[in-house]
Length: 110
Image (cartoon, rainbow, N blue to C red; front, side, top):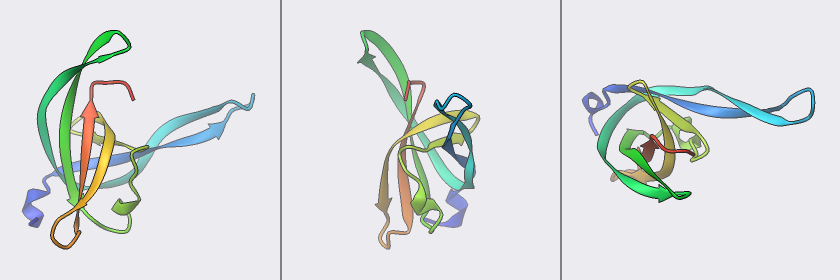
């Protein structure tokens, strides 16, 4: 994909698990990686979760594959266009495997 297609600045956040003074593990999200990406929002759907209907939004996020971006996992989350997205899946796409495609969801619990 040509460089001009990567027009969105996204931040990958990672949760740091640190014990508090009582030994309970809690984690704050912090910026892990910031890079250029192509964010394509899709029409969301509704699903039944815990007896309640949740409306979610889906997005496909494409970014260049690099040693840093290949470290992204589904435990991380993505911030783009002022919204926080849960990463649901990661695929290595492109003829040369030079593009990562993340399926992300916003508006639902993790």
